[in-house]
Image 1 (cartoon, one colour):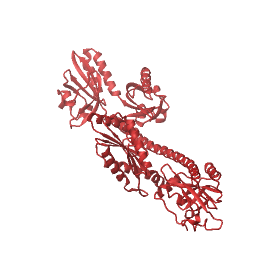
Image 2 (image 1 turned 90 degrees about the vertical axis):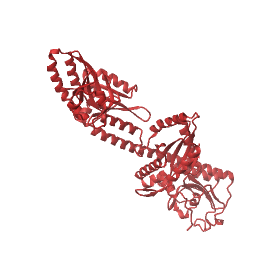
Image 3 (image 1 turned 120 degrees about the horizontal axis):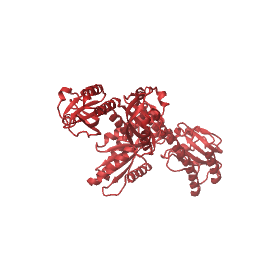
Image 4 (image 1 turned 45 degrees about the vertical axis):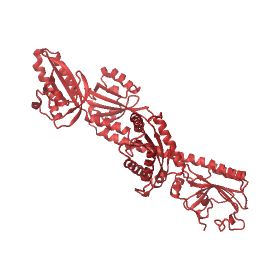
Length: 593
């Protein structure tokens, strides 16, 4: 048996070879063509494209050898892939490595061999293009160049296959990430006590939640079949159509609209609509998120109040009793004050919301009691925070109206708790800027934070550095242990990066196995030291569900001087280019842009 060297990157090399499915391929036209060209251009009787597996050498295409596979222990090409340059042996009988080789140690055996390794984009040798003869011979420099050129054509084809595999995996991972995000949104969507729906670009329903169905009296299937204009009161349809068109045209990102809907049984229902555009990666409108709040009780109270203002003073007592009944049973808090802001009415919902009984607040100043940091605007809608009895803060939507009764000015405030709405808005905003797998800031968040960091650097006259990190060997782990292990690896690397930098530094994930670190107040030399520290942190073994794994990293460092004129895009490009220089230099290295 002939001994053969095993490359240091054997595990990673085999993983990439299997991911390309080359060992299973047969009669590849390009491989066949290259072997024929090699025999003709170099005037040899034998040529082959070989792929070196774990225990076997596969001849993907051959001329003159007359076989399709050999044990790896009998593969001269196993030596070719273990060295950086071509392997040329003018007389195999005189080389101690091959003198007793089964294909050499015969009267008509091989005498001459020359091979060039076939390498992936990451520099992993997975096979070779080789030529052979049954007579010793010398390869000229021109002939060796020709062999290299033919091998380079095969390498380009391998790189193309890698790109296709990477693109397919990227699409699969993106689909998984989107599915996870969609599941979280669906949980909020289905469980919300407020009506929620997704609107398509043509204005039709895409999805509706149970609360919205209960609000309108439809089943989900029935409501999907009714277009939004079909449930809108005829008097409000033109306004709805005009305002919704502004949102669809991109003239605004959000829209607040009060209008009347018609329930399944024909009853009128006042709703407060909060519409938000959902944009795709390229900034295109994908759909509209609609949150509907039932404000029928508030509108009924407002209508009763309006009728009261228009009635004669003789009817005040009767109408006041009617209004009190409506207000006492309203879902929203209602507070009435005199012209100086002293409380004259405090309904049951206000007691539940703020914690004070009406006897405790009578005559007190409403601004001092609830709104020490700013009063609601009169004859307008305000969003502000109120202070409760227990000291907690509540976000509120306050409708404040001025009216006159018996010659006296009064203020009426309908107060709505918007905590759930704020939480939904905050959740959507956070998820749009967070990578769902690692919980790091995503590319969109980086595009916002990097210009802010550069602006601070210019204002303070302090340096800044951007680190572009690409993992080495991630694909091999992903292929060998599966996507779940790859996701676990990325989460662990993200956690290590967060722990290894300062709280004032920003760590983000761009895509795939690419990360970015923004170091504020740090110059080029210190940034290089941080980068080397991160390489050591990443290089530590990881325990994954199917066993231990290791990856390294290549890092590009792009410094930013506060008096420079670099844009965020240029700074990122420089760090990216420096990273590729580090990767080509042998991986696990750092380069300064």
